[in-house]
Image (cartoon, rainbow, N blue to C red; front, side):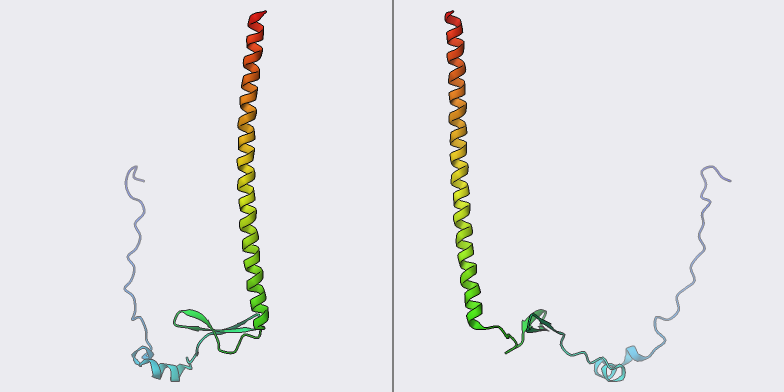
Length: 126
């Protein structure tokens, strides 16, 4: 057993056989589709009553597949707008409250500092 030598020596791998023994790869696409039954068509799916199909790399709604009411869609958009406005108002209120809190905290620290200065001034007099 060698101290620094290489004891692992793998065997050489045999050469690979031909990649494919089938001659189907020589056929053109249309012949392969007919021979193997590979006519898939476009992928489609149905989500919440709306039918979608995959075209040109994107999911597209099929024409006339939306079963929802247009009034319902408008109502949802209006509600969404109201919620966004309410959210913006609440964010503004939070910002104002944080400003008020920081101002009050700064005033409190100043008053504490003045109180400590007065206490030290009174102690010096005695």
